[in-house]
Length: 297
Image (cartoon, rainbow, N blue to C red; front, side, top):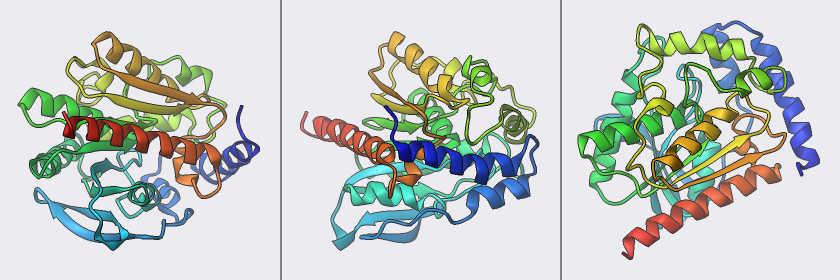
């Protein structure tokens, strides 16, 4: 059962995001909406600029210089907006839970269309992974990039993360999931037309069925254990549900949970939303368990 706060938060998101964006894409308006301050940056952690593999980004570490489980985190933002700074509520939350996080500031579309963001993520991941075992996370478009990175790293013979935690990842840029229609009026953040308009901004002339653009259509064998959280009312709900089904069929362990009522990437609201704290706690426990299990193997 969803909390009362989940209902209130979903209403707030609809008013502040969906109603403001409408049904068409104006990149400048979308960036202003997505990048507006709205959530508190967690305290008790440090935020420092850094460069990994030639890609600029941000290190987020537990206070006191304690070395945590190494987490490579890819921020969302529809491929066209946001940055490591906008996602401090998430990276900071992980740092408070004992992770040392690097979030790359990958190039954004439409100025830098596919595969620029993936190239940046892969370059940073290759250097990050060279320093030792790690896990990976991402939300929304960042979840898409995280999964595409896994497919590309596997095919190139690069080290894979011990596990991945993905919040409402976009896995099917063709938009063929039933939730794209079923939740068209219920999703608190996105009208489906907004999502459809984002795709060509990111892909340019690339094929949306390319597995590096839509990981749902890739060969998923050999991927590490995955945790996937999505909202029951999201248009992207089935991007997680269908991906989990295909991954399991390929022999990949998947921990999938669909939360009622909550809006897209509700984990930002962990300061007051119990479902956000539950999601972050589960993701942290999952990532640490796999990181430590491999370290002790």
